[in-house]
Amino acid sequence: MSTLQNKRILLGVTGGIAAYKTAELVRELRRTGASVRVVMTMAACEFITPLTLQALSGNPVHTSLLDPEAEAAMGHIELARWADLTLIAPASADFLARLSGGMGDDLLSTICLATRSPIAIAPAMNQAMWDAPSTVANMTRLRQRDFIVLGPGSGEQACGEFGPGRMLEPVELAGHLELLFSTEALTGKTVVITAGPTREAIDPVRYLSNYSSGKMGYALAAAAAEAGARTILISGPCQLAAPERVELVNVVSADDMLQACLEFSPKADLFIGAAAVADFRPATVAEQKLKKSDADTMTLELVKNPDIIAAVAAQGQAPFTVAFAAESEQVLDYARAKLARKKVDCIIANDISAPGIGFNSDDNAVTLIDRRGETRFEQQSKAQLARELISRLAERL
Ligand code: PMT
Image 1: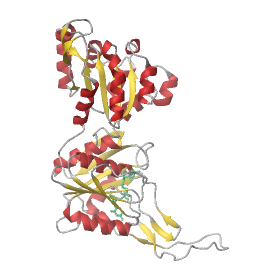
Image 2 (image 1 turned 30 degrees about the vertical axis):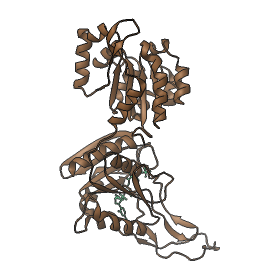
Image 3 (image 1 turned 45 degrees about the vertical axis):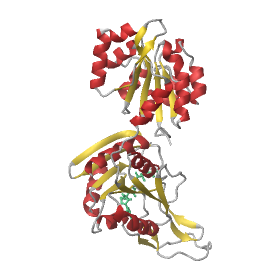
Image 4 (image 1 turned 45 degrees about the horizontal axis):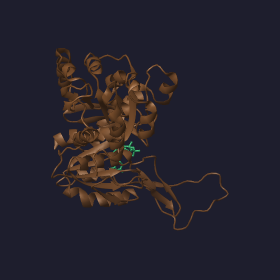
């Protein structure tokens, strides 16, 4: 499977003859399983129509920063946050100059300032323009600022000249992007991750549960597998497919999850508890469906569930253990207290009161806390956040 599967690629198209190749590029990226959204500069629209790229990407194409209707649908900040990777192809000499100068005078340059995703650029221009001292200086600055430079290729140019400045072919660009997403930071390691909610039965047809979708835990599992780890995902009931190369263990209740964690965690180097485990379960499970009585209220007696992550961390040869702390107030204080109480190595504080992040959303924003200090990860897709967290945790191992 391609490492671009389910990745969100924001394709920025600037004005140059190579813009015609972006039709093929969008098809190629979608073939790998990536979602593609396209942002075009005004000059790019002179070379290829937004309609073509809209049809091929399956998403509306964005062209203007000052269009209230477009901004209301998906504004520049949302687009910037949406991207797992921003690719500017073709990147014209003029756009590279504006990027290097930190300009924000149109939609694409503004997104480049606002996004936290990596930005890859595929330059395309006449060979003399590529060699011009201004372009060379701009490229040096962009490389120093960690922009990823793909190409350009060398050969015959649209203007009839020969030399460097051709945009790489769509298949080559997609291949480079695939490599960007594959890391081997966890090769040889085993990672166990819990995800999703647990269900605590009341009777044969009812249960107690919560709104966890499993997206955060599944994204972490995908990122761990991508990083080369043997990955075991212990999941409560979710509607998600197991990520490629991940061993999925399905469980229902907190008790089931505890048993599975105790079975698999002794083999693990890293354990991450992203599941939203029910803290309590009904004291008894009725064998038959509970009947409605005439009373207006009913009382359900609950008993405490086992603390799974504390049990994992307390084992003789415990893996490096990471808990999540879902908090709606005093997020960092409560998370620090949980780090100490559960005796885990690291805690990831998750503010679930903020809209658009936390339970059942596509994005998240967290603070990683351990004995070395605290690191904030701003709002981004759970897929991208998971990669950043896995790479940070791999360093700790
Ligand atoms: O699944 P999503 O929709 O993507 O949402 C992701 C998430 C918000 C559920 C996730 O990012 C998250 O914050 N998970 C932890 C939720 C939670 O239950 O937090 P907690 O503060 O109650 O628990 C703290 C830690 O102890 C967690 O690692 C939890 O897995 C663990 N725990 C809790 C109770 C229990 N009985 N046993 C446990 O192991």
